[in-house]
Picture 1: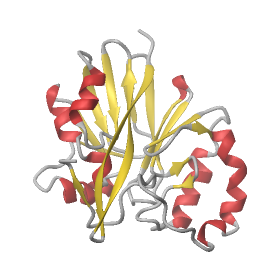
Picture 2: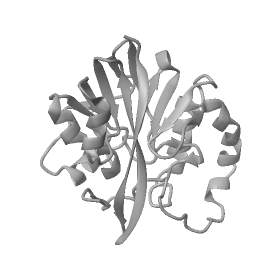
Picture 3: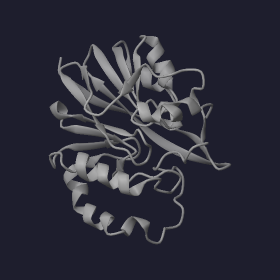
Picture 4: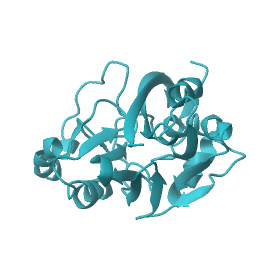
Length: 236
């Protein structure tokens, strides 16, 4: 069977320094009619598993250890006893959501996951979190960028850039070196292509991202959760 990509959009509340905000997340499913890998299982396990259907979940991969990227990881993985993968440097963040568990796989740069007839290559893209990763699928011409790169630019935490220099280095060296036609599939918002975003890179480097901040966006937010201490309300 030929591999394909499917999207599940979920929404819920995150607590950012005592204020609740509505956030929308993309969960991506890669596979064929028999088997899949689930990327960034946000919060709605039932909705994700409904899309998966009878197919076997081989692995659950979290591009970041933040709550709105891992909120449904255990439930989605449990159905088929799938392995959960998180970068070793984001395990501390994982434990803020799942205090009594550890992920099964400690991802590292250039690791590979296979599903159907394609491979997902782990690209280390720290910045938003120390262990942030992107997943490049050459066979499907797509890169899953998590919170590292969104269609409106580098992703933030609670409206801020925790390590912007590292994040821009990640984007420039690991993402903008991919073919321009590569689909960018982020954890928040709509998709685009590398060629749509790469022309903005010089502007980002020149300091445009740290200039005067615009007024706060109306919910739902597209930049995900805030920094450490954020907790998901999984009942919403």
